Picture 1: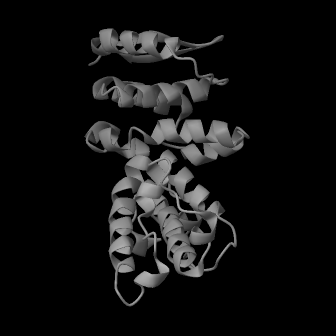
Picture 2 (picture 1 turned 180 degrees about the vertical axis):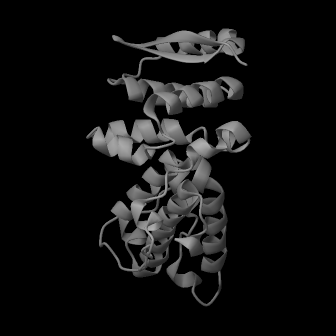
Length: 243
């Protein structure tokens, strides 16, 4: 049985304490020191803990990240309460919600490779699905917003749920970009449809007039909607057909 130690984590004037295996003591303490030295402010305990998970992942300390993630799940009881419900009940503003969710889901790939922790990432089944006569969802795709906020939404989703969405968005971006080069329609896609590049590389986003044109807006808004579906089915641990 792994012996647990209490670790102190500081960020600004805030300090939190969590327990993790003693065998990762050197890693976690070194990471905690580098984390404390960073200048970013995180005003609540849950934000600090989530940001530290992301810090561990970014520095490639996967064992430590997994240990810190497991501690987070124990403290906030995520095996019973969905992380999105936790964020909502805390009444966080958008930046705070972004930090908590991004930190939590940054461990997705690592946790999915660990059988003992894998179940922690799967959200509890919604009451609608657990009923004797469960409800079924119907998704309606389409529509145009008339503003470039749909790409802001896509960028937010990709940043927060990167480990869940990156492969999908890369694949779909490649498909859309190749299709946009078809000689029958290429004239309306002078900048192509390389949406993954637009979302991840500074200075590559086309003009508003281009991304708001119907040939561009329609498929990319559909992609943004599909990103929501991808997050939903992965975090619930069901296939799209089971939603």
